[in-house]
Amino acid sequence: MLPPDDPIFTGGLQFSGIRFPPSRPAGGTDPAARKRKASGKPNEVLRIARALDFAARRHAAQRRKGEAQEPYINHLAEVALLVAEATEGKDANHVIAALLHDTIEDTGAKYEELVEAFGAEVADLVREVTDDKSLSPAVRKELQVEHAAHASPRAKMLKIADKTSNMRSILASPPKDWSDERKREYFEWAAKVVAGCRGVNPWLEAQFDEAFSRRGEIA
Image 1 (cartoon, rainbow, N blue to C red):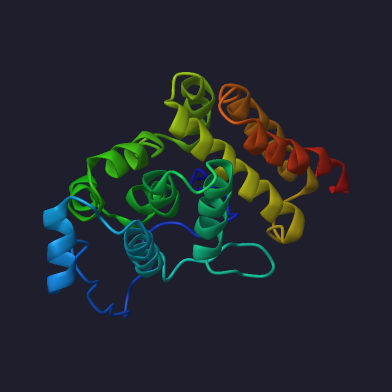
Image 2: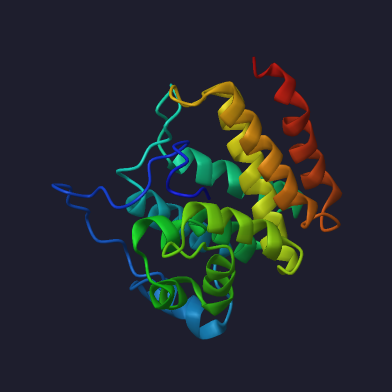
């Protein structure tokens, strides 16, 4: 998640002229899905797949602004993978929230929509890591630093994974219009945010530290 003036990724709604086929309801309409719902045993693999589909459709018109112009879904998939590995695949809701973590902020998805499709636990986590876009980019960046230490453990992990993915992107495919100074400034700001998030998962923090240690590769 980045303030709108930081062009690592394209932001905002860019769906003009694009028609999306409707997603299947999260609860499913087939008898097997109804049976799972009635039994209280949701299929977690199916829920994750539907979250991936939801995120891919919502972010379909967005791309990273690095030289490679990668689809934005690549970032979401990387954040979700980092969370899945950090939790050893034991927290499906955390992985789902990772896939959806930018949907409210960058696609116009509503909190209530996420509650209906994926449950309040997922929606609450997505909302917790969503910036208030009515604020200026500078204020939003300051608030990320200030609020990091007070976030829930799951939100802290999402923030660490998000910043790790962003730094890797800057190193692998930086925006053409970013100066080296601006790249270094992002790394330093990310480190300030993550400083308030430490103590939740050593493995995930090590992934961030490894990416941060490569800041010397910036010319």
